[in-house]
Amino acid sequence: MPSTPRRRRFVAGLLFAPLLTGCFAADGGDASAGRSEGSRLKVALAFPPAENFSPYGADATLLSRLGVTEGLTRLDANGVAAPALAESWSRENDRGWLFTLRDAAFQDGTEVTPKAVAASLTRAAGADPVTAALSGVELTAEAADDGRVRVTTAEPDPALPLRLSSPGLVILSAEAYAEKDAVSPVGTATGPFELVEVTGTTAATLDRYDDYWGGRAQASGVDARFIADGTARTNALRTGEADIAEAVPVSQAASLDRATRRETATTRTTSLLLNTRSGALKDPKARAAAREAIDTSVLAKGVYEGHADSGAGIYGPALTWAADKRVQPAGRAAADVTAVAAGQTLTLATYDNRPELPEVAQVLKQQLEKAGFKVKLQVREYARLESDALAGKFDAVVSARNTMLDTGDPVSILAGDYTCEGSYNLALLCDKNVDRAVSAAESVTDTAKRQDAAMTAEAAILGTDAVVPLVHQRIITGVGAEVSGVLLDPYERGLVGVGTRR
Image (cartoon, rainbow, N blue to C red; front, side, top):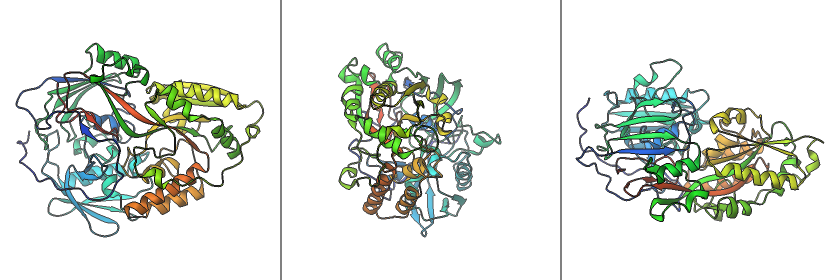
């Protein structure tokens, strides 16, 4: 194993990002590592690994929340790109950036070198399907001199330092890619905790990585269990079987003592995505009728019991700049329920990993039926839903999506979720006006102007009625009375860190 890293410089991050109403902060406690061995943490997570912990899909966030993986950059409390494995960076020209690496080591004992970083980014850039952070972006990386990595994009990308903070663009050692068609983060990452054992989709064991560049974690390890049922997760916290329970259902919030309940404003929006390519809602008039049938205030006050705000757009109130810049959609089709063929039934799907979603879907079913639609409801676990949703097998999907999760850039989420080439386009939207608006926004460098362009693109998307924003969520985390240092992250990328302890 490498020796304990030396003290290193901390260089302030560059570039813009939205200010958040919530603060990405540790829940009390000192972030410095203690001398004791520390207790192991028991964590109950909502989503089981769906892709063998591959960092190029939905499992990427699991790895970052458990403190396993890191990228070149991270997001700070205000969503600004800050140093992680890169201690500083500079822009060479409109398409190229140089990132200076800090002294760090992989969990398998090998050194984090420019060559290793370039190889890892190259592998991520070639992932199929493309990782969400690189949707519409051609990226190349190569080792440079003086401990630096040169990252180049085919088109100018002013948000690149933000993009490289994505959980899907983490840096792994060469050993992670030993198998041709697989990526393994087991013992190959750089974070404070090392993934050492995985028990199917039910549990994972992590040990403290003592040579972490950011200091020795205060907990000796993490025992994670994946519990899809929200009531069961909350009960695990109450009975002491878990020290931390993520995504506590609003129906269970009142059952927790105030001291063990943490509510964090997030950039997560629950939306109804309507299939624009095929089926009962292909006709814009039918989608408009579906939108007009929905009363979002019922969801915020009823289903979420006041722990959410009515849907205002793709971006919610956690992004403080969005409300004043919002552009009203124009050119929407006239609503017409009869645009759905006689006798045709809508298939409305959602997942139960977030326990409010089935209840949301049930309310929507009632509202749509009242408006004249025929609706069939399907509820599955997320791992069994995603591929069918992306294949267009449903007419509508209720989904909770953190709009800033992948990159921290307000434009990137639009490219990934709503353009013809988007990799997470649940609405299967392909609209030339939308693509044009998103492309224009991607080229803007100035912070305020980029936000303006993002809101123009949002209006173009909403004008297609491909998505109906339902509520903007606040996430509730259950934290045991003896636990401190939990990361309350509005982006939902972090949960357990160096200072998390019991």
